[in-house]
Length: 438
Image (cartoon, rainbow, N blue to C red):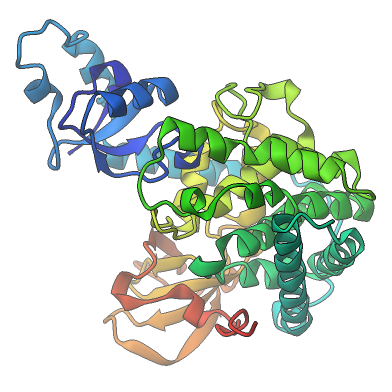
């Protein structure tokens, strides 16, 4: 059973299922571990206010307080914290997110799609590969103490900006491709893509998009000053290792400030992408208004990509679940209005989401409907009987196709990637081998 408890009630033998903040902001890096000793408890007290425990995999509150030490903090408080079930919390958040998207202000968009996803994919694929090669080269140069190829980075970002302006779905679709062995370079690429798609949604002009995209592409250059042993450690970090990990922010800022041709506004993405509204982020523990607009955007897209990516120490969650988590964190970690805008940008059902329809059929979200974000296009994979549809069929939920009990066909629930043995990227119009060539 999943139970929410204050950190002061944590005892050795409990199984920590989830933290109250993004795992990337703590030394634990992954969610799902047993509290082994007082050192774990000290770290949890330092970085969290509450956690979620799994009473089936570890001790419960009652078990841990049975030693008569008088440290139960009052069972009424703990019971109060646990009143809302996991299912109730999840559904409440889903309803709030849906209402946020449905009630979005109908302001005229600055940009209108000039191409279809299919028409944009070829040039977007070429641009993505070139940008990946540029950022990979830049990271190698930083590691070796060489200067950054600023002009190459600007040209790559400029090409991405043009593709995003024509139709952001192609590049967002390509951002679904993730290769564990090349995390930092591809993470930087994906964060730049997501930042540009978000900036387009917010109505940034072309100059601002170029600055934002450049800052996002270079936001993690400081990680080249952190050893791979720490970057890729499969277990929790020591406090010393965590401090070294955190140092990538000032190291990156120092590198970028020493590089000619990079505007300070672009550097803000690197400077602030780990700061949080509550003041619990790093490197300076800044709050709300102290964090620049580009810094807030960088923090949102960096966190989103990190928690949806598989790492040696963490299995990525679905895009839908990531948005739900970030919506839950919006009053402590992120700017609430920007989080709501980001959900509107990505849609309740982001590209690549594996979904079950109201009829029981299974599909993958292929494109976002910028007019009606609850009605995307879906590639149908399995029929109601869970038999494969050959070939898969693309449907548009805007067409109000017949569904269940006389109601139009709609998405019922988002499924974890891998359900029914399905890898969603297999059914998106992208080449799996895109990044396999060196």
